[in-house]
Image 1: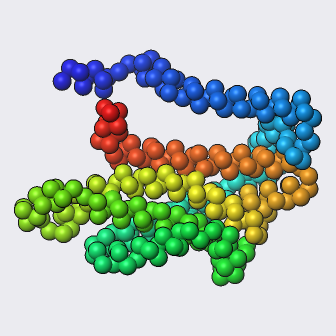
Image 2: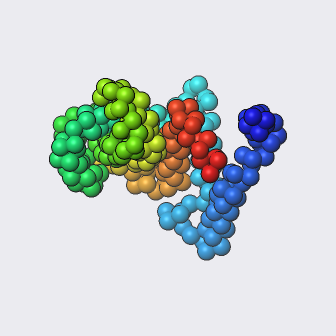
Image 3: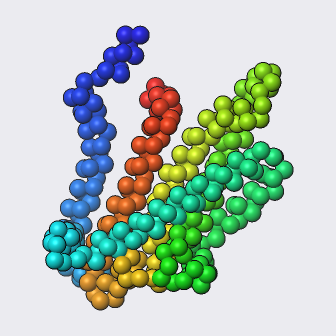
Length: 281
């Protein structure tokens, strides 16, 4: 009792130092990569169109922030970031929700699971670019729904496959115990199968969160309004402003990271018991 109390009531300096020790290697690697990048471009005189300096990219990024803060100006980069963010988020929510719903239906009957799983795996292996022209033709090249549809398809199958595994790979002894208490199928689903599937679901969401951003940007390469990151990168690169194109790549990375961190926070909220098991290991 005292041990658990002391762990839960760790002081703020202890928690801060633990976080520093955990993230310090990552920060050091990131700083080292940026310094090496800056030095190699300077030493070998690499041209901007091949690889601009991080300092130049940072300068362009600060220029866009100043435009955003200036009420009389407009930053096309942040407008494009907002549009791509909405496309990726909308597709992520729709695709993951549909994947979980279909998994709940198919996992109820083993025959349906065995029949649909090969098709899900085959569809998951189709490249992203194969869907872009089709969805643009269905919904319109400038319609954000076409990009959301592509993102939904990309994240649907990993979510569905992982959720089905979590719902079906339950401990046989626990399942027999539920049957011995004459538990209804809904009670077994709510009390046993869904808690067992939560780690699988969040594992799928961690994969789907960056995939959603990749799908949205790649779909935009096939056309769309200029105020999207994919079109923005293409046009800035064709105009030889590669530093500005790299700022858009940085923004896309930040969106992907924010999605991933959000999933991690949700995992800690909905599965505190799982986090406790991992920390004890």
